[in-house]
Length: 113
Length: 110
Image (cartoon, each protein chain N blue to C red):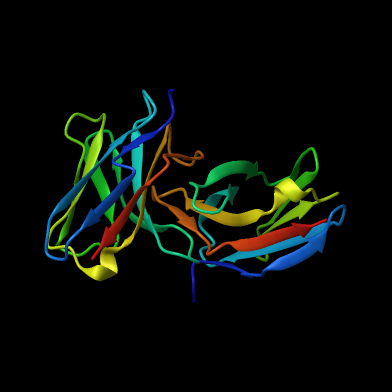
């Protein structure tokens, strides 16, 4: 399968714990995006990378959130000291160029209890 | 004002009906436009890009009106399998992020 891959698919964690998600984009896609989606809402932009450079972060992204793409390939999204409000689907997408469509992974569903 | 606005629906239509969705965007600098489809608890998938001259893909037709800053999607001869949420997506030339609307839910009934 050469699509966008996300791991894990599901994560249940206790409030206050740290979690890390991984995204493997489509090979040779230099743009990688992270979104968060809650029930009944469209995906909300969190951050994106061009190669290894993080070019933009949403104001929604608190200091507890950090993302990396160290070698311009896979990316990780870490949430520290999770809160119940962090429960959501975290979606990763990649695209080959600016202003082109993005392709999504299946997402990581986070539940904070 | 929200950057991308859509009527949330739901739109409940019988099989074979024609249904149209509209979407408005606030930033006149927006350059790229897309419609995505999202099934329940699945990831969004690209349905079609929207070009300035309008474009058609089978039963689906997309239109862009830059002057009024809106995008439309027309679905003809609706099928049960068209039931999903349709997301309007906008991208600015100078920025990298794709901005999503909240989506319009379509339910096609037999």
